[in-house]
Image (cartoon, rainbow over the protein chains, first blue to last red):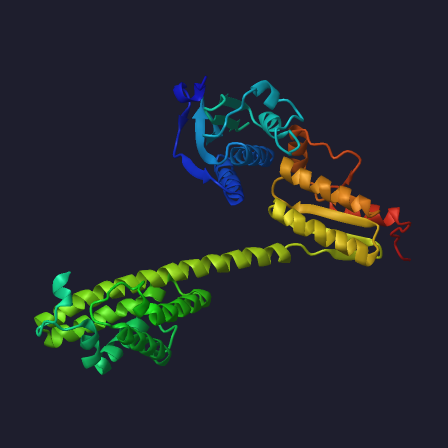
Length: 144
Length: 284
Protein backbone atom coordinates (compact mmCIF):
# COMPACT_ATOMS: atom_id res chain seq x y z
CA UNK A 1 0.00 0.00 0.00
CA UNK A 2 2.92 2.27 0.77
CA UNK A 3 4.93 1.65 -2.34
CA UNK A 4 7.37 4.51 -2.08
CA UNK A 5 8.86 3.19 1.13
CA UNK A 6 10.01 -0.04 -0.49
CA UNK A 7 10.68 1.20 -3.99
CA UNK A 8 14.36 0.52 -4.70
CA UNK A 9 14.58 2.80 -7.69
CA UNK A 10 13.60 5.91 -5.83
CA UNK A 11 16.36 7.31 -3.65
CA UNK A 12 15.89 10.46 -1.69
CA UNK A 13 18.50 12.97 -0.63
CA UNK A 14 18.27 15.22 2.41
CA UNK A 15 14.70 15.24 3.70
CA UNK A 16 13.18 18.41 5.00
CA UNK A 17 10.73 17.92 7.86
CA UNK A 18 8.29 20.57 9.01
CA UNK A 19 5.58 20.45 11.66
CA UNK A 20 2.15 21.63 10.49
CA UNK A 21 0.32 23.08 13.47
CA UNK A 22 -0.95 26.45 12.26
CA UNK A 23 -1.67 28.54 9.16
CA UNK A 24 1.83 29.98 9.23
CA UNK A 25 3.27 26.47 8.90
CA UNK A 26 1.22 25.93 5.73
CA UNK A 27 2.83 29.04 4.25
CA UNK A 28 6.30 27.96 5.42
CA UNK A 29 5.79 24.48 3.96
CA UNK A 30 4.74 26.03 0.67
CA UNK A 31 7.86 28.20 0.58
CA UNK A 32 10.15 25.28 1.46
CA UNK A 33 8.62 23.15 -1.30
CA UNK A 34 8.93 26.04 -3.76
CA UNK A 35 12.66 26.30 -2.93
CA UNK A 36 13.07 22.56 -3.52
CA UNK A 37 11.16 22.79 -6.80
CA UNK A 38 13.45 25.59 -7.94
CA UNK A 39 16.60 23.63 -7.07
CA UNK A 40 15.18 20.55 -8.82
CA UNK A 41 14.81 22.83 -11.88
CA UNK A 42 11.09 22.27 -12.31
CA UNK A 43 9.44 24.58 -14.84
CA UNK A 44 7.51 27.60 -13.55
CA UNK A 45 4.17 25.93 -14.28
CA UNK A 46 5.24 22.73 -12.51
CA UNK A 47 6.58 24.71 -9.57
CA UNK A 48 3.25 26.48 -9.22
CA UNK A 49 1.30 23.23 -9.53
CA UNK A 50 3.42 21.49 -6.89
CA UNK A 51 3.26 24.47 -4.53
CA UNK A 52 -0.51 24.68 -4.93
CA UNK A 53 -0.91 20.93 -4.30
CA UNK A 54 1.28 21.32 -1.21
CA UNK A 55 -0.90 24.17 -0.03
CA UNK A 56 -4.07 22.08 -0.41
CA UNK A 57 -2.69 18.97 1.27
CA UNK A 58 -0.92 20.82 4.09
CA UNK A 59 -4.17 22.61 4.86
CA UNK A 60 -6.00 19.28 4.87
CA UNK A 61 -3.40 17.99 7.34
CA UNK A 62 -4.04 21.02 9.50
CA UNK A 63 -7.83 21.30 9.23
CA UNK A 64 -8.95 17.67 8.94
CA UNK A 65 -5.95 15.86 10.44
CA UNK A 66 -5.64 18.24 13.38
CA UNK A 67 -2.04 19.02 12.50
CA UNK A 68 0.84 16.80 11.50
CA UNK A 69 4.02 16.82 9.54
CA UNK A 70 5.31 17.65 6.08
CA UNK A 71 8.37 15.91 4.64
CA UNK A 72 9.86 17.07 1.38
CA UNK A 73 12.87 15.92 -0.59
CA UNK A 74 14.33 15.84 -4.07
CA UNK A 75 14.12 12.35 -5.55
CA UNK A 76 15.60 10.86 -8.68
CA UNK A 77 14.47 7.81 -10.57
CA UNK A 78 15.82 6.52 -13.87
CA UNK A 79 17.74 9.71 -14.53
CA UNK A 80 14.87 12.10 -13.94
CA UNK A 81 14.48 14.39 -10.99
CA UNK A 82 11.42 15.26 -9.02
CA UNK A 83 10.22 16.63 -5.72
CA UNK A 84 8.48 14.30 -3.29
CA UNK A 85 6.28 15.67 -0.54
CA UNK A 86 4.62 13.62 2.19
CA UNK A 87 1.88 14.77 4.54
CA UNK A 88 1.43 12.77 7.71
CA UNK A 89 -1.14 13.19 10.45
CA UNK A 90 -2.59 11.13 13.28
CA UNK A 91 -6.07 12.50 12.77
CA UNK A 92 -9.35 10.64 12.37
CA UNK A 93 -8.43 9.31 8.92
CA UNK A 94 -10.56 9.20 5.78
CA UNK A 95 -13.44 6.68 6.02
CA UNK A 96 -14.34 6.70 2.32
CA UNK A 97 -11.42 7.56 0.09
CA UNK A 98 -13.40 7.40 -3.17
CA UNK A 99 -15.91 9.86 -1.80
CA UNK A 100 -13.15 12.15 -0.50
CA UNK A 101 -11.63 12.17 -3.99
CA UNK A 102 -14.90 13.24 -5.59
CA UNK A 103 -14.91 16.77 -7.00
CA UNK A 104 -17.04 19.08 -4.94
CA UNK A 105 -17.47 16.78 -1.96
CA UNK A 106 -16.30 18.20 1.35
CA UNK A 107 -16.75 17.24 4.97
CA UNK A 108 -15.88 20.81 5.92
CA UNK A 109 -16.69 24.17 4.40
CA UNK A 110 -14.22 24.31 1.50
CA UNK A 111 -14.87 24.01 -2.22
CA UNK A 112 -14.32 20.25 -2.10
CA UNK A 113 -11.58 20.39 -4.69
CA UNK A 114 -8.50 20.16 -2.48
CA UNK A 115 -7.75 16.45 -2.50
CA UNK A 116 -9.06 15.71 -5.98
CA UNK A 117 -7.52 18.89 -7.38
CA UNK A 118 -4.14 18.16 -5.81
CA UNK A 119 -4.23 14.74 -7.45
CA UNK A 120 -4.60 16.37 -10.86
CA UNK A 121 -1.70 18.74 -10.18
CA UNK A 122 0.96 16.06 -9.68
CA UNK A 123 2.09 12.86 -11.39
CA UNK A 124 2.33 10.50 -8.40
CA UNK A 125 -0.40 10.58 -5.79
CA UNK A 126 -0.87 8.02 -3.03
CA UNK A 127 -3.15 8.13 -0.03
CA UNK A 128 -2.85 5.75 2.89
CA UNK A 129 -5.65 6.25 5.35
CA UNK A 130 -8.22 4.42 7.42
CA UNK A 131 -10.52 5.54 10.23
CA UNK A 132 -8.52 5.99 13.41
CA UNK A 133 -5.16 5.38 11.75
CA UNK A 134 -4.40 8.87 10.53
CA UNK A 135 -3.62 9.85 6.98
CA UNK A 136 -0.48 9.80 4.87
CA UNK A 137 -0.49 11.43 1.46
CA UNK A 138 2.55 11.19 -0.78
CA UNK A 139 2.94 13.20 -3.98
CA UNK A 140 5.73 13.51 -6.51
CA UNK A 141 6.10 16.11 -9.23
CA UNK A 142 8.60 14.98 -11.86
CA UNK A 143 10.71 17.26 -14.02
CA UNK A 144 9.58 17.06 -17.61
CA UNK B 1 19.17 24.43 54.88
CA UNK B 2 19.20 24.79 58.67
CA UNK B 3 22.68 26.24 58.88
CA UNK B 4 21.45 29.08 56.71
CA UNK B 5 18.99 30.15 59.37
CA UNK B 6 21.31 30.06 62.34
CA UNK B 7 23.27 33.23 62.87
CA UNK B 8 26.90 32.41 62.31
CA UNK B 9 29.60 34.97 63.07
CA UNK B 10 31.66 33.75 60.11
CA UNK B 11 28.62 33.90 57.85
CA UNK B 12 28.43 36.86 55.52
CA UNK B 13 25.19 37.60 53.70
CA UNK B 14 25.32 38.39 50.02
CA UNK B 15 23.56 41.64 50.86
CA UNK B 16 26.35 42.83 53.15
CA UNK B 17 28.88 41.63 50.59
CA UNK B 18 27.26 44.02 48.13
CA UNK B 19 26.82 46.83 50.63
CA UNK B 20 30.40 46.85 51.90
CA UNK B 21 31.77 47.03 48.37
CA UNK B 22 29.09 49.32 46.94
CA UNK B 23 31.23 51.75 44.91
CA UNK B 24 33.50 49.08 43.50
CA UNK B 25 30.61 46.75 42.60
CA UNK B 26 28.67 49.48 40.84
CA UNK B 27 31.66 50.63 38.85
CA UNK B 28 32.74 47.18 37.65
CA UNK B 29 29.15 46.08 37.04
CA UNK B 30 28.44 49.10 34.86
CA UNK B 31 31.70 48.61 32.96
CA UNK B 32 31.08 44.93 32.20
CA UNK B 33 27.43 45.44 31.29
CA UNK B 34 28.16 48.41 29.02
CA UNK B 35 31.08 46.62 27.34
CA UNK B 36 28.76 43.80 26.28
CA UNK B 37 26.41 46.19 24.52
CA UNK B 38 29.03 47.44 22.09
CA UNK B 39 28.34 51.11 22.65
CA UNK B 40 24.60 50.93 22.08
CA UNK B 41 24.06 52.37 25.56
CA UNK B 42 26.26 55.01 27.14
CA UNK B 43 27.99 54.12 30.44
CA UNK B 44 25.87 56.83 32.05
CA UNK B 45 22.60 55.22 30.90
CA UNK B 46 23.83 51.78 31.91
CA UNK B 47 24.98 53.23 35.23
CA UNK B 48 21.48 54.47 36.01
CA UNK B 49 19.95 51.05 35.26
CA UNK B 50 22.63 49.26 37.28
CA UNK B 51 22.16 51.65 40.17
CA UNK B 52 18.42 50.97 40.25
CA UNK B 53 18.89 47.21 40.08
CA UNK B 54 21.53 47.43 42.83
CA UNK B 55 19.25 49.39 45.17
CA UNK B 56 16.31 47.05 44.60
CA UNK B 57 18.52 44.00 45.05
CA UNK B 58 19.99 45.25 48.33
CA UNK B 59 16.50 46.10 49.56
CA UNK B 60 15.42 42.55 48.73
CA UNK B 61 18.09 41.10 50.99
CA UNK B 62 16.19 39.81 54.02
CA UNK B 63 18.80 37.32 55.12
CA UNK B 64 18.46 33.87 53.59
CA UNK B 65 15.57 34.29 51.19
CA UNK B 66 16.90 33.38 47.75
CA UNK B 67 13.64 32.59 45.97
CA UNK B 68 13.22 35.47 43.56
CA UNK B 69 9.49 34.72 43.22
CA UNK B 70 8.98 35.62 46.89
CA UNK B 71 7.44 38.88 48.09
CA UNK B 72 10.79 40.36 49.12
CA UNK B 73 11.78 40.52 45.47
CA UNK B 74 8.57 42.10 44.19
CA UNK B 75 10.14 45.54 43.60
CA UNK B 76 13.15 44.04 41.89
CA UNK B 77 10.94 41.90 39.68
CA UNK B 78 8.82 44.80 38.51
CA UNK B 79 11.96 46.82 37.82
CA UNK B 80 13.47 43.99 35.74
CA UNK B 81 10.17 43.45 33.94
CA UNK B 82 10.21 47.09 32.92
CA UNK B 83 13.86 46.93 31.84
CA UNK B 84 13.36 43.71 29.83
CA UNK B 85 10.38 45.21 28.02
CA UNK B 86 12.31 48.34 27.16
CA UNK B 87 15.26 46.33 25.88
CA UNK B 88 12.99 44.06 23.81
CA UNK B 89 11.29 47.04 22.20
CA UNK B 90 14.62 48.79 21.57
CA UNK B 91 15.71 45.72 19.62
CA UNK B 92 18.39 44.41 21.98
CA UNK B 93 19.12 40.67 21.77
CA UNK B 94 18.18 38.31 24.65
CA UNK B 95 21.88 38.05 25.62
CA UNK B 96 22.30 41.81 25.66
CA UNK B 97 19.23 42.04 27.87
CA UNK B 98 20.28 39.44 30.44
CA UNK B 99 23.90 40.57 30.57
CA UNK B 100 22.68 43.58 32.55
CA UNK B 101 22.23 41.38 35.62
CA UNK B 102 24.76 38.64 34.82
CA UNK B 103 27.51 41.26 34.78
CA UNK B 104 27.01 41.62 38.53
CA UNK B 105 28.57 38.19 39.05
CA UNK B 106 31.71 39.16 37.16
CA UNK B 107 31.97 42.36 39.14
CA UNK B 108 31.62 40.69 42.54
CA UNK B 109 33.92 37.81 41.62
CA UNK B 110 36.61 40.27 40.59
CA UNK B 111 36.38 42.03 43.95
CA UNK B 112 36.53 38.70 45.82
CA UNK B 113 39.58 37.63 43.87
CA UNK B 114 41.32 40.83 44.92
CA UNK B 115 40.68 40.44 48.66
CA UNK B 116 38.58 37.32 49.02
CA UNK B 117 37.79 35.23 52.05
CA UNK B 118 35.79 32.04 52.53
CA UNK B 119 32.57 33.62 53.92
CA UNK B 120 32.74 36.05 51.03
CA UNK B 121 32.79 33.17 48.53
CA UNK B 122 29.90 31.46 50.33
CA UNK B 123 27.88 34.62 50.07
CA UNK B 124 28.86 34.86 46.44
CA UNK B 125 27.57 31.34 45.75
CA UNK B 126 24.12 32.36 46.98
CA UNK B 127 24.21 35.67 45.17
CA UNK B 128 25.20 33.77 42.05
CA UNK B 129 22.04 31.66 42.25
CA UNK B 130 19.88 34.72 42.68
CA UNK B 131 21.51 36.46 39.75
CA UNK B 132 21.04 33.38 37.55
CA UNK B 133 17.36 33.27 38.44
CA UNK B 134 17.00 37.00 37.83
CA UNK B 135 18.64 36.60 34.42
CA UNK B 136 16.21 33.84 33.49
CA UNK B 137 13.35 35.98 34.72
CA UNK B 138 14.50 38.81 32.45
CA UNK B 139 14.71 36.44 29.50
CA UNK B 140 11.18 35.20 30.09
CA UNK B 141 9.84 38.73 30.19
CA UNK B 142 11.92 39.60 27.15
CA UNK B 143 10.49 36.67 25.15
CA UNK B 144 6.91 37.54 26.10
CA UNK B 145 7.44 41.13 25.00
CA UNK B 146 9.04 40.09 21.70
CA UNK B 147 6.08 37.85 20.96
CA UNK B 148 3.73 40.73 21.63
CA UNK B 149 5.80 42.96 19.32
CA UNK B 150 5.68 40.34 16.56
CA UNK B 151 1.93 39.96 16.93
CA UNK B 152 1.53 43.74 16.71
CA UNK B 153 3.67 43.86 13.60
CA UNK B 154 1.67 41.06 11.95
CA UNK B 155 -1.49 43.01 12.63
CA UNK B 156 0.02 46.24 11.31
CA UNK B 157 1.09 44.40 8.18
CA UNK B 158 -2.43 43.11 7.75
CA UNK B 159 -3.72 46.64 7.49
CA UNK B 160 -0.82 47.97 5.46
CA UNK B 161 -1.24 45.31 2.84
CA UNK B 162 -4.76 46.22 1.81
CA UNK B 163 -4.82 49.55 0.04
CA UNK B 164 -7.86 50.17 -2.11
CA UNK B 165 -6.98 52.70 -4.80
CA UNK B 166 -9.28 54.79 -6.94
CA UNK B 167 -8.34 54.48 -10.61
CA UNK B 168 -11.09 56.59 -12.14
CA UNK B 169 -14.51 57.88 -11.27
CA UNK B 170 -16.46 54.77 -10.37
CA UNK B 171 -13.50 52.40 -10.69
CA UNK B 172 -11.47 51.18 -7.72
CA UNK B 173 -8.65 48.65 -7.64
CA UNK B 174 -7.39 46.30 -4.96
CA UNK B 175 -3.86 45.08 -5.60
CA UNK B 176 -3.29 41.93 -3.57
CA UNK B 177 0.25 40.97 -2.60
CA UNK B 178 1.30 37.87 -0.68
CA UNK B 179 -0.61 35.17 1.07
CA UNK B 180 -4.37 35.45 1.20
CA UNK B 181 -5.53 33.73 4.37
CA UNK B 182 -8.87 34.01 6.12
CA UNK B 183 -7.84 36.88 8.39
CA UNK B 184 -6.48 38.95 5.51
CA UNK B 185 -9.44 38.19 3.29
CA UNK B 186 -11.70 39.56 5.99
CA UNK B 187 -9.71 42.82 6.16
CA UNK B 188 -9.42 43.04 2.37
CA UNK B 189 -13.11 42.42 1.85
CA UNK B 190 -14.12 45.01 4.43
CA UNK B 191 -11.76 47.62 2.95
CA UNK B 192 -13.05 46.98 -0.57
CA UNK B 193 -16.74 47.03 0.33
CA UNK B 194 -16.33 50.19 2.39
CA UNK B 195 -14.52 51.96 -0.45
CA UNK B 196 -17.17 50.85 -2.91
CA UNK B 197 -19.83 52.45 -0.74
CA UNK B 198 -17.79 55.58 0.07
CA UNK B 199 -16.89 56.32 -3.55
CA UNK B 200 -20.11 55.05 -5.07
CA UNK B 201 -18.05 52.95 -7.46
CA UNK B 202 -19.63 50.35 -9.67
CA UNK B 203 -16.46 48.63 -10.79
CA UNK B 204 -13.78 46.95 -8.71
CA UNK B 205 -10.62 45.39 -10.03
CA UNK B 206 -8.96 42.78 -7.84
CA UNK B 207 -5.38 42.34 -9.04
CA UNK B 208 -3.69 39.10 -7.96
CA UNK B 209 -0.34 39.59 -9.73
CA UNK B 210 1.35 39.55 -6.33
CA UNK B 211 -0.36 36.39 -5.05
CA UNK B 212 2.17 33.55 -5.40
CA UNK B 213 -0.28 30.65 -5.51
CA UNK B 214 -4.02 30.41 -5.97
CA UNK B 215 -5.32 27.35 -4.18
CA UNK B 216 -8.91 26.45 -3.38
CA UNK B 217 -8.88 28.53 -0.19
CA UNK B 218 -7.66 31.67 -1.99
CA UNK B 219 -10.18 31.06 -4.78
CA UNK B 220 -12.99 30.62 -2.28
CA UNK B 221 -12.02 33.88 -0.58
CA UNK B 222 -11.94 35.69 -3.93
CA UNK B 223 -15.33 34.30 -4.93
CA UNK B 224 -16.86 35.42 -1.63
CA UNK B 225 -15.43 38.92 -2.03
CA UNK B 226 -16.86 39.18 -5.55
CA UNK B 227 -20.27 37.98 -4.35
CA UNK B 228 -20.30 40.50 -1.51
CA UNK B 229 -19.39 43.32 -3.92
CA UNK B 230 -22.22 42.24 -6.20
CA UNK B 231 -24.67 42.63 -3.36
CA UNK B 232 -23.63 46.28 -3.27
CA UNK B 233 -24.25 46.57 -6.98
CA UNK B 234 -20.61 46.57 -8.03
CA UNK B 235 -19.02 44.33 -10.66
CA UNK B 236 -15.59 42.82 -10.01
CA UNK B 237 -12.88 42.03 -12.50
CA UNK B 238 -10.04 39.77 -11.41
CA UNK B 239 -6.78 40.69 -13.13
CA UNK B 240 -3.15 39.68 -12.98
CA UNK B 241 -3.73 36.01 -13.71
CA UNK B 242 -0.37 34.69 -14.85
CA UNK B 243 -0.12 31.69 -17.21
CA UNK B 244 1.10 29.27 -14.54
CA UNK B 245 -1.72 30.35 -12.21
CA UNK B 246 -4.27 29.85 -15.00
CA UNK B 247 -3.05 26.31 -15.66
CA UNK B 248 -3.04 25.46 -11.97
CA UNK B 249 -6.54 26.83 -11.42
CA UNK B 250 -7.85 24.78 -14.36
CA UNK B 251 -6.15 21.59 -13.11
CA UNK B 252 -7.54 22.16 -9.62
CA UNK B 253 -11.02 22.40 -11.11
CA UNK B 254 -11.87 25.84 -9.76
CA UNK B 255 -14.51 27.65 -11.78
CA UNK B 256 -14.77 31.41 -11.74
CA UNK B 257 -18.15 31.22 -13.47
CA UNK B 258 -19.32 34.51 -14.94
CA UNK B 259 -16.66 36.59 -13.18
CA UNK B 260 -14.56 38.55 -15.64
CA UNK B 261 -10.86 37.77 -15.51
CA UNK B 262 -8.01 39.48 -17.34
CA UNK B 263 -4.32 38.75 -17.72
CA UNK B 264 -3.15 42.25 -16.88
CA UNK B 265 -4.32 45.18 -14.81
CA UNK B 266 -4.22 47.36 -17.97
CA UNK B 267 -6.75 45.09 -19.70
CA UNK B 268 -8.96 45.19 -16.64
CA UNK B 269 -8.88 49.00 -16.48
CA UNK B 270 -9.85 49.22 -20.16
CA UNK B 271 -12.74 46.78 -19.62
CA UNK B 272 -13.99 48.69 -16.58
CA UNK B 273 -13.81 52.01 -18.46
CA UNK B 274 -15.70 50.65 -21.46
CA UNK B 275 -18.34 49.25 -19.16
CA UNK B 276 -18.79 52.72 -17.69
CA UNK B 277 -19.20 54.16 -21.18
CA UNK B 278 -15.70 55.59 -21.48
CA UNK B 279 -13.02 54.89 -24.02
CA UNK B 280 -9.37 55.71 -24.41
CA UNK B 281 -8.50 57.43 -27.67
CA UNK B 282 -5.27 58.90 -28.98
CA UNK B 283 -5.24 62.68 -29.01
CA UNK B 284 -4.35 64.30 -32.30
